[in-house]
Length: 291
Image: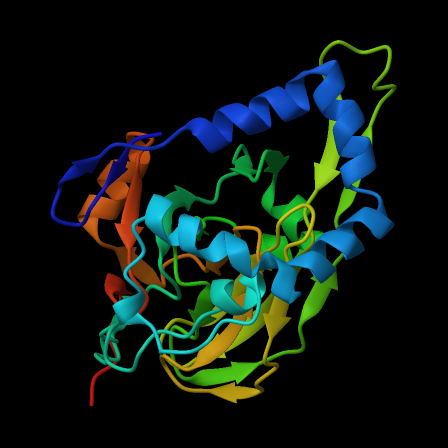
């Protein structure tokens, strides 16, 4: 995967995690291991470990390996790895564009933009989804036909809190439990695997961009989605955060509401991701509101 900065600089992408996952899902031994790792008791134990002081020892090496600048975050004594993973960024480190006609990124991430067409299939965390699959609601999915799907892929080095893109009101959160199932893993040398990630989505009635679906997609095992369940919100306010596991945000925009910035469209059409930071401009209203 090729990744670009907004200034056009190309970055080298560490593919070790992708290669590991390919081996995990694509080998007999890996699928047998996954059968064990995805058992509820194992995921609960994994989560308990990440929340315990026993996990603190992993923090220093993780910071060094991923070149994380802790000066950007609130100073605190981390009591567990999850405590570190959900660290809070300092006020003012991320600039939030307050132009009401500007669409901002909800999180730090690697962004890809897709037109929502009947043939669209999204690969998110080694699973393939249509928009209907993601929402499990054909009627809601139909409201976004012809619009845009924005996939924000967070990696382990990113700030794992996510924020509202505009002022507005929110419907209730809809939580969809993930499923993992391998078909006869002992006999099969390769696939088929049925897997969907746990995810939560909210319809946001925004002031400037119409009705927007914001979905949080969790990790397969110990990842956890924590939403703050705000019913009214302001641009830049925190919506929630992820615990350990790496995660993804999906925004669905209705047809004709937003014109995405040209570099994001061009990179996405070429199969490249673009690094964006929470609060920065990624697009603009097609029909700007005037005072």
